[in-house]
Length: 305
Image (cartoon, rainbow, N blue to C red; front, side, top):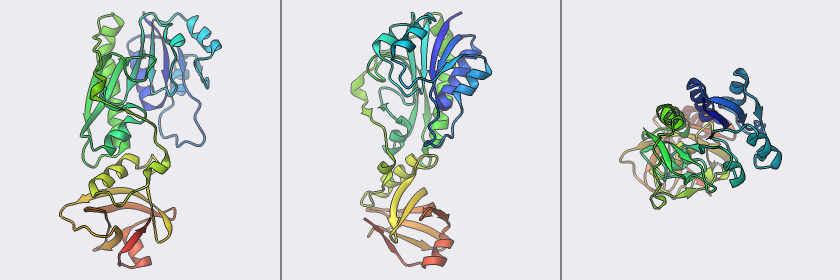
């Protein structure tokens, strides 16, 4: 029986830990994160799953400190598996597992290496993404590929919807290749890093809408940061506004960037093209197009810069 130490968090961590247990892997330790009280915790708890199965867990702020390295080394693991764990593992830690350390990344590597790959893929208008199991090295997301599973990104999919697909893709990729991996017969495909790029994390302020952009780019941003992420933001009538859901409007005229209500529907005119605004908040309160028209009328209101 292969022994593993698992570094895991979030839904991908939860589902992939289940896969290891289903295949009889001896999970000697789970390294996870304490939930941040300032973060919207909408995902499943890896720690609770580990506790359910009687697996010891630790939540170090930094897994690369000597005492954690010693604790893990004493377990003599065959493998590490990292499933959406947020800290980088340094060479001294990576050197411990006899058969290597593997990470599950939420893109089709070498595309979208780095942070929040699902959000970046939507922002860039990709029509496909997926999950990749790969060997870990000191540099993030550049080790040999073991398995991949693709999923489609549909034109109106939000990041949450795509992340749910990627979670299933991760589970499928791991489940399919795990028997071969445990037997030492899994493929190792070197990445061509020239075919992809590295992307950093995103902050709430990165969701501010530039209304000079075309409607497709703004629609992609709205989808990429829709709840449970912070949302796409702007200012209207001097009040903060969140655009939560949009649809592309075909054949709409361009003009000054403005918000307006027509025939019971809300619209946003962009630098080029127009979006139907399906859901939005103004000054912290969600309202319908009818609510807005009753309160402010149906004239056009330019977005504040």
